[in-house]
Length: 234
Image 1 (spheres, rainbow, N blue to C red):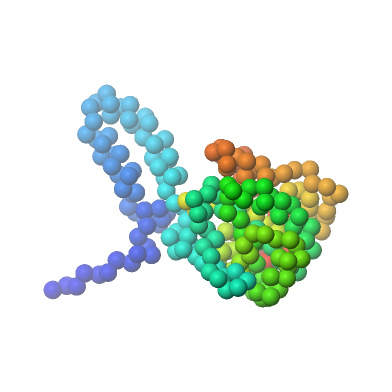
Image 2: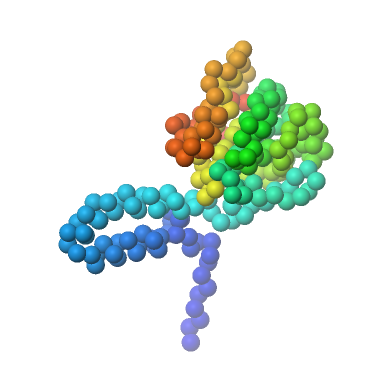
């Protein structure tokens, strides 16, 4: 008797672009369309692309293993930074205590996290392997940070989120989709080119759209700052 080959769960995902099978919900809609009356079938065919698009967008875009990712805080307590915990979004601030640009943004980062703490989960992420728990704790104390600080020493979260510099912000939906990636505002027009004051509020505008249930008008703005060591740059 030929032994059945075990299924590899890592390659079986209805949301994977490499999977040849369709999501079950989409297949059921198509089956219904084939059995409906001629008039209903014609109307449904016209609406089918929009229905399928809506369903696919509603499915989690983050792999299960990514949503289960845990990182330690300064006391080695594990946290799940991609778990929204019932809130509207997860906001990740990638920072470095060794980056002068990060220091320039800490006041605004703290203000934003304080203003919206009830609507989103906020995490301060250190993806530099050189940052120890002691250094991260000291940076948080000196900067007045009140959100959870996590150590991403293996850079798994930075790579998943697409973060390349500090400071850089990535906003995730509860389903794991990236809603916004980039700068906090335009205080810096280049890695070392600082204005007297910011003239935009990119992250605040993005969060206001998310909380209102609207699409983020500009979901990406290039962040300016210090490169994250070990992360491939474009």
